[in-house]
Image 1 (cartoon, rainbow, N blue to C red):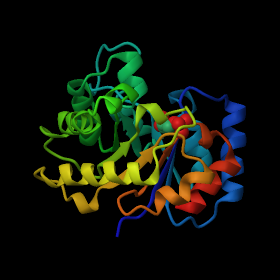
Image 2 (image 1 turned 60 degrees about the horizontal axis):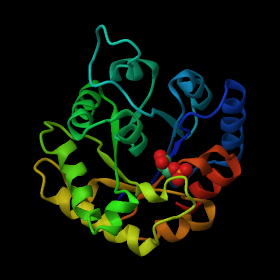
Image 3 (image 1 turned 90 degrees about the horizontal axis):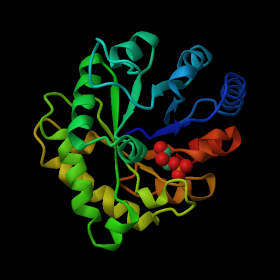
Image 4 (image 1 turned 180 degrees about the vertical axis):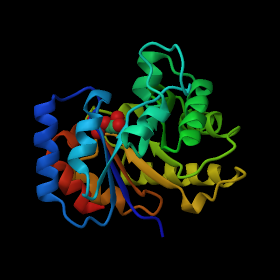
Length: 246
Ligand SMILES: O=C[C@H](O)COP(=O)(O)O
């Protein structure tokens, strides 16, 4: 039985004051959740979030990390630094990193290896663009991203996959529960082919305009084990309702 996992990706939003207010609101509204919950604020709010979540059901993750462990890499943040700070999770390969920072499958694979080696739990984000879906390329694109990041890994401890169709991110368009389930089942079948991965144990999250209003229908699908939530995670009542649906 896979325990649900609901993750908040705050992206590049917030201030110290709004982070405190948001976390305070969540701690007030969420007690004894049936899901694991992680908050992923920007790097500069990580320490604050870790302190604020201490002793609660919430843990904290980063939105990215370096593929290097240390050295002269200006502006980078090593996975080891995130572990030292108290982070449990790291998002890798988010479509916004692929799109705006040119991250390749090879770089994402290197980040994943470094993150696992440092002791972080990795969330690999994959998903097709609208054009790729319209061209009938959604499944091969997702398989390429998945296998491109995972095929050469020596360890995939605690691996989580987030399927986020790019056309559904921040657009208000959500994959239907059937569409999302179809892709999640495909991803699980692909994972089943990999050595060293027990596909039945891997949690698969859906991401893309998840809200309180659509969360329950998505979570009812057999291969959807939770959500990676962007915009709706910036509102404590909305995010608490998504957690309650999991
Ligand atoms: O990481 C989260 C996803 O990009 C989804 O964002 P969204 O919920 O704002 O569509």
